[in-house]
Image (cartoon, rainbow, N blue to C red; front, side):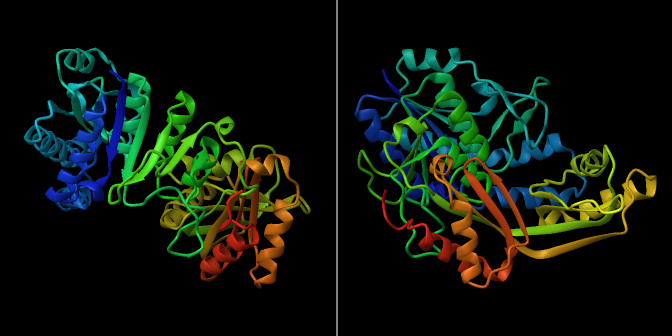
Length: 412
């Protein structure tokens, strides 16, 4: 039989009533002739509760035991979903990651999927099982320990199963009815997209859009898994939601497809750094080792052998960055006069595959921000993205102004 993967996020399974509602959706697909792999998250709020218990019990916890605790939320949901389907006379069984097995590396709390052998589940489908309810977010290490994939890992689980089993489609059910041109909470003119290219979705996800986890989009693009983002709380027709698909499946699109933002950014500047070969490695190597996620990087013109180096990072990593760079200076690896942190900035990005073949997008973006009196602190560009750092107080104004400037409330 054809196979579907259906993933339900935490808000979609937050209560027993919502689990029943999700189960009815699964039952309809079974009635339509599909075998279904259902990937479930923990019930809304449960993972945060479990993480809190771990931190309260052991502030410097063993990551292996952390995974054992926080993975339990998905196990509960999987069992409840399977029981609900059985009450509907659907032949369903729950599966934990180690039972499938979903094989990962040993990086606890942020494991990467190595492979998903299909023999076990396929044998059960062949013997009459119609629905496999799999606990998302979790797998098993080479040492036989439970691992977790990091926050949002159930999206990655779903796409990985769709790729491994050659699913016809992977439906991601969440609390929104699709992917929007920007955050509808900021701009009431935000428009739901019927389709969006993998590359655009990957950029939007990495830039702050919370609809899909970045790694899940990477996997979908690599294995050409057709993703559909749908609402758990609305009746969905055949063309509902947003389809994330290859660029060639989109006949016509706007030059810019979306405006993304990241609110909690910081701009850090090293003042008067020696301008010499290897200086960038000396700065950013220790930052990487300290787990600082560096994003935008700008180096000023050198003057008398000295230069300024600016980069951005999440605001909650500023202290780690300061400590790492202070250590580098103490060791003599890097010499700089001062380190200045601006923790009151945000990142605004315009994204669109149409930017490849259209000039003037950057000029239009900068003119728009200028007309609103918004000063740009840092700029970076790629083939389908332009990002700027601005003062955080202008975030909503910038998003609304850019959304209007690029006509994103209108279809192509």
